[in-house]
Length: 431
Image 1 (cartoon, rainbow, N blue to C red):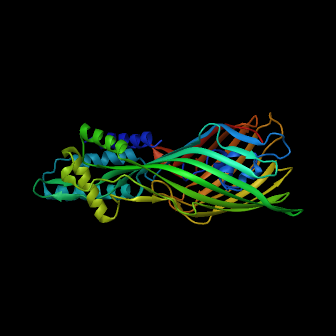
Image 2: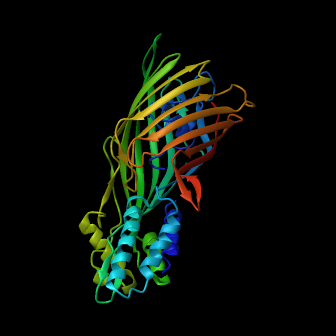
């Protein structure tokens, strides 16, 4: 059987058709959700942040993005030498069994491999970017600030669903419903926000903001039975994954507040307060109506549905989340130290849980010829519990480059590689 090729091809299919909803864009990945005027993308966090993005001392009341930032990332499960394990399982299931004793021995070996792969074998890819020119921020003469943003973010994940190996005593062969299950989601988001100072004194300024987001979300999923081996099955899976997509639209409401003084600021935000909901495409429930090449995968999906490992019909809800942030700065905000913490976990478009804790420091020079630098650390407090060391730089006050390097490792072809990695690049107007 060609399980290695099938799985690899299916993962590639996931990535292609699911062009990070759970991840912020660009330098915000490094800086967290704390508003920083030197980084335009931090305006996409707290709805009150856009107020600080336009310098009221400048004659130009507009600030916009130019291109990007375009961000790409991946996460993989904690399975060393996954390809070798797939090949080993492939060989076990292909053995011509000649006795019950041999079948029992092979069954034990295969079940050990399948159990580990069911826990940890997965690959996830992420992409996100604002549409060129966005976000657009306009600050009126009286200080009220409008923001319009348009962005697309996407995620795709394939993981292994394990099912115990059974022995067919009549045919003397090993059988299993173990399968590859892939899900994807794409969110096209149009947001309109407004922020303004509602109180000001020598001690500081209180800014409140709100944002209404229109989400057009496309969700899809497909399942491939592990023992499906021919090219027709691979093509059928690819077709199912590309064609089984459901697009729905809903609106989300965000609110935020920031208290800013000369040397510090604190903020709180609530996102998706009304918890908008979107529909996934459905997996078939009548396998007799499916083509013969699709029936093994259909039957496996029904079994996993009965076991509670997947749902044939499901919805995705953008769960309500609250985040607190704090920052201190000196030298007219050139040097800053910031932290943000999400108070509750939420799921992304493919169901993975996230709750980020982030700390960062950054230095921004007044000169266009001295690069700005930022360093950070962030950890997912739930779900995968992955953590990142982050580095970013801004060249000529406009070109932003950011890299987040996963601190957890996995062996690939005998070499240690990070289980997660994120990179972005973009150009924006200067503060």
